[in-house]
Length: 155
Image: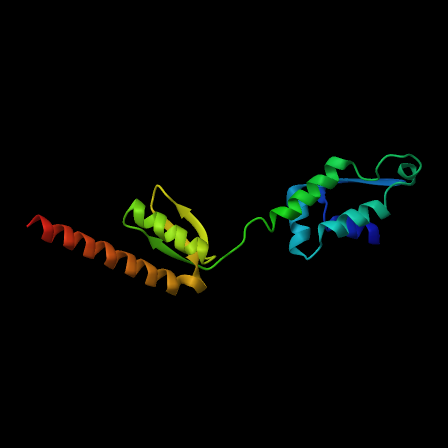
């Protein structure tokens, strides 16, 4: 009936077993993910399971849902928000000193998103790319002038 239809929204269909006074099924990662795609939230699944638990479970002092099942449903729900998309500007630095200077600048600007010191690559928030690019140009101009001055001194 209605309860069975509700269970089918987040349980593995192949594992349904109906007895006279109980329905058994397996909750899998795939079945829960399908429920999430349909707009069902973890708290709604847990509330449904608690509301429709077998009456004998209500007589004891134990939880209506095993802790590991509840925890796993919550973890599967958190997986959905674990990755976030951010529009960034990728900047390839020419030296370690430049990488350190740019990283310091973008950190102060609250624009730093990610960096790889070994590859000398920095990702900055896209909306703060212009001041970062301006800083890098100034940095590179300053370094080029220093090199020219050093070359002129040697001659």
